[in-house]
Length: 491
Ligand code: AMP
Ligand code: MG
Image (cartoon, rainbow, N blue to C red; front, side, top):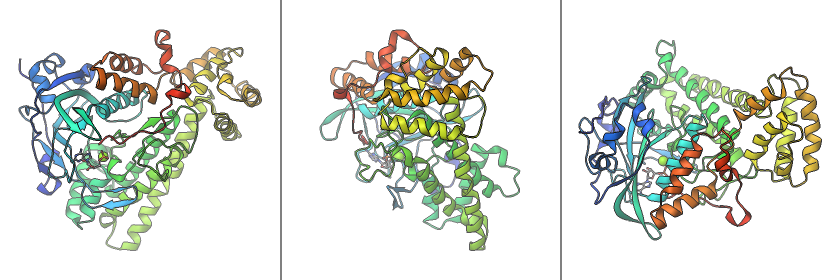
């Protein structure tokens, strides 16, 4: 049996300035610790073959499979608002692209596979902890129905990486509909390479926005398309309590997928100004700031596209502003519609936004758990005696006052209690990758070479909307002493 990847590479056929050709650096003793078998099948790969020693060597970057055209992609980016004209894949190599079972082109990338011409002072490697974190959280996001890159495999390298201490090295095989970022456009814009911007825009339209191919003004339509997808994406993040943590323009995907899971986290108690990332001292990427930051990043994209809009700078800017102006309504529509569903409303009426905002305000004031409040509200919709939602509030009376108005509002709709509960449980997850659980799973793997907790956690998170009574403890918020206050970038 040999490993066959049905590669059909398109990015590496773009001009040389778009990337550097570089192979993964061979590692000492590759060992596959996790293969995402359903995803392998979706990609047209044979999971049994990937699990052989030969497969492990490929997934750890020790051998390059036939048909691969390994490259490190060039990009720039604003990091915490500061522009860096050259970043690029410093520890990742794109092996190539395959067309999946749905006909969608997917990048297969090794992350942590050794230095590249873009590594700057970095070692090109990844530690096991961050690799497991990205695996867990990206696959949880997929199960929650949120656009995201995916994780095909995690492998340990048999080598150590030096961070504050020596840690086991690992490689994540990441799958994305592409790894093109806002920062990819910025790379060419800062070099005033308008031809490259046009080539990149054409590639992106054909690949991610084929419906725009015949548009009268395709580059305007492209910006509009990215604005719409990013607005929708951030609304979805907020609806599950997700905090990306490093929304730099180089971590902002043109396809509208969540990308680069570094110091990300889901909140436990609802707090709009929540920040976890140890490197985000100013709270730039706090939970409630994410829509504003997404628009800021899109504005940087718009600046890159200006030369394609019009020779007349003023006209180009006016058009860009017009297109960016759609962000706010698209975001609010998605966010408010999602919140109405979360509290079990089937229709939209005057006063709904205020009703929802009052709940959120009471949750913030009472340190109510974001996930459990909504999940248990579904139980209360089915059975008014169910009081687990109420129990999330430090002062349960604050909930009672709100619940009275909520019951009045839902009584205006014809759906039965059971119908409402089912609809709410289908949008309010029971299980999210709570940070204290993620940390515990990582500790077991790194300290004890024990992957049983990781396997179980991944299995539970694959069905976030199902009750799974045997695994009920995974739904619990952290005890005070288990609370994780900071997450680390893990580079
Ligand atoms: P990130 O914070 O993972 O989004 O990475 C930001 C930039 O730093 C990207 O250009 C990465 O390729 C680069 N980078 C991060 N970690 C490393 C590393 N260990 N070695 C080389 N480059 C890195
Ligand atoms: Mg990044």
